[in-house]
Image (tube, rainbow, N blue to C red):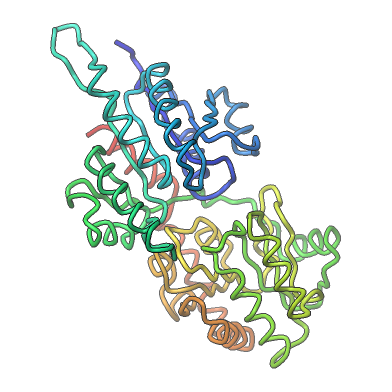
Length: 395
């Protein structure tokens, strides 16, 4: 018998996001003397989080048939690819992250478990591996065509039967799983995402000067910013439309900054040009260790239309920023309206613009949010997330 428990983390894609950060943080912070950890991920660009793991001697398995979008050819072959990986790695725990690989990985993991029982020395046959799935924002809460919702609902229900435990990063996702009857209540548990709260933030002046120098921004303006992948779910197009309202009706000395990369870049750039916001709205692209620049912003604004539990919102708490975000997913579990931030309805540029303007001119409200945010951030520590996840591994 092996002395260490072998965990195989599976993730659909390499693009950095919540699932990738989650798997990386667990990998680097679990007890290395107790766990032997490997990563399986859909083949893509070797991002910094993967390089970081490789530098720590973590083995990475690239899966060429695991892709984000529905694809009959690749989705069929990914099952064989995953089975082969399970045979090769012989994990004690398969920990699935993201909907796509979460469904296929669970079913194939269940088949592997049935066909490959582990014989213990006293002759008792034990079925391994344990199959765990973390929901980083339930896919059924996305604005999808009906046929896709039906497909994902069926796949989530079938794969839910194969999973030993389902971790939800927000209570909202747990209740959504119960609503859609994805799994029985005893399989579901909420464990909030957590971060290392000792972030080495640049101070406001340093952060602004660095970004202003690198990207030609005006330091004298108000800065509204966010860190987000450029995906439709992040609702960034509504922030652009809110910016138009603010610039035309309230304050021209205001700029909006998005740090991040993704498939919606071209559409967002078209909207910026269409609304003549080239001097007020800036897509900075990917910046390494982007969180260190958070204090550059006067307000952090996340306009998501679907969210699990946002790491960047927690980082903004730790940076003690005034925050405006949408009342979706796990956001209200981080931001209490008018206590440590403002919640607005999604897809409402007018509401978003009014909230930004009102917060900019209300210093007392800004200070109230700032003072409350650091205490709130302590509820989302990395140590707490690691401890609660390890309890699931040991059940």
